[in-house]
Image (cartoon, rainbow, N blue to C red; front, top):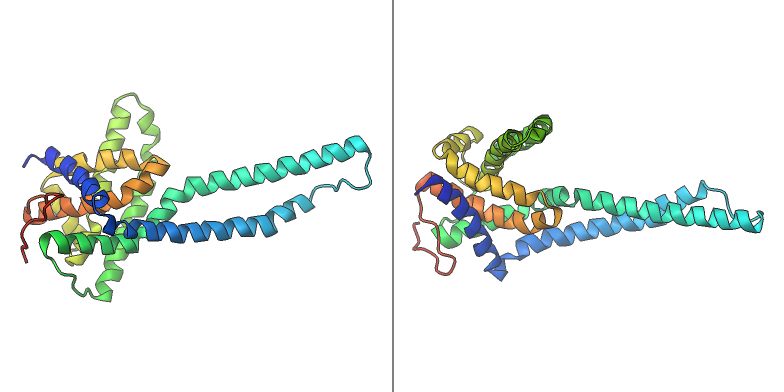
Length: 256
């Protein structure tokens, strides 16, 4: 199968499989619910403690003339509205990153469900020592990806070649990270995942670049993350065992 088609097909099938199965939606809705509770707590704390403290630093309207009283009240209103807008902007800016952090455990369960349903691969116990080692390696990989994106960002301003180089490098790394959950269930090391990706670099680019572009949009990233987790599983199974892509309407035969 052509590598470019494999990458695109894995991502597309990830969307079809996830959004075509309402019973899978809980894996995306539960982290949203948790994040909603956290955000509600932050807003409550800000409204009950932080913002009143900020307003207490301003002069009070009492004891001033009518015009000064009006100006002080207007200042209180401006500071209050600006504080809420700033908090809302900050929470929105961090939403996709926080959602990705909160949802990782749920997406691991989603990957297990996908592998069981389409390839008959039952979950198996993984040693805690391996999980800690692989988890630290993948966390470092993610940190390196973030730092690398900051280093490459200025070069992305170069017309045509800059954005293309940025997407190629970061898209490949995102595709690799999309396979981590399935690889962990098979007990692979980070080095083995990288070697697996080298068997078909075109598939990594074709999967990672459109997924990366999609996930840069805050709202769409929330919709795309669970589908990308499923798509990364499909890509991993293709590269590892040359399994056929499952038909979204009819699961393939059990391969045990």
